[in-house]
Length: 252
Ligand code: AP5
Image 1 (cartoon, rainbow, N blue to C red):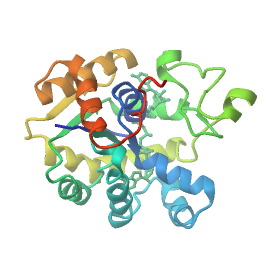
Image 2 (image 1 turned 90 degrees about the vertical axis):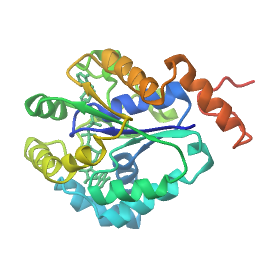
Image 3 (image 1 turned 180 degrees about the vertical axis):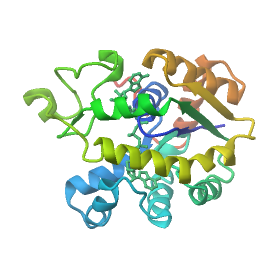
């Protein structure tokens, strides 16, 4: 069995925040399509140039393009024992493609984080990200209020300190457009999954720590195993797949 987790929910629901922590604590990769696209924009690659304007308007990039990116990422050995998908699937076409990509790779746990629209707009407008590494200000460390003094993701962030900026698609007008697109194109993805026995809903208005606990319980109950066994299941499976220490495992 693998720990295949899909995070669903509108912009600002806390998908990225929770995906990062869950992935780190369970030794699986976080695969965020938003992060992959933002990195491409940051690097000025051909992909980045193609998607920048679409992202800045809050619209979705094409299904074929994004599905190709996810297919390639999930084929890497570090995703064989599981992954957390953040931001994909966002259309029913993408969800259908994901089923095909994951055929014979075990069930997909789908967690929908629910938060009212006005709270989403408030969160997204006040979000700050590090211009150097793209990290979100840590909602866990700061109770979702202030940005921390340090982010620790790159040598530059550690030595010079983070450069907190607003994401280019986080203005109020673009957030409202993203929400409109969410209700039109992405909400049907919930209907696609909700009759499955591995579908769970979480109240995203709780504190980040409470949401984290609810996610771990949701994953454990979906796989019908104690939460304490999730990580060891991943480690056991990974040790048979790749010959390197898994992410988050003790070195030395
Ligand atoms: P993407 O990056 O995926 O953006 P999103 O889905 O709109 O989600 P967000 O990153 O805005 O929110 P989140 O739910 O991750 O919340 P977060 O944890 O950051 O996509 C960006 C763009 O890329 C799309 O618009 C599209 O153009 C393109 N794209 C990406 N994937 C695509 C796909 N599959 N198909 C087509 N196009 C695609 O939290 C938000 C804030 O709230 C943070 O400041 C955080 O600190 C705070 N917070 C988190 N949890 C809590 C809490 N419990 N209480 C209080 N504050 C909290």
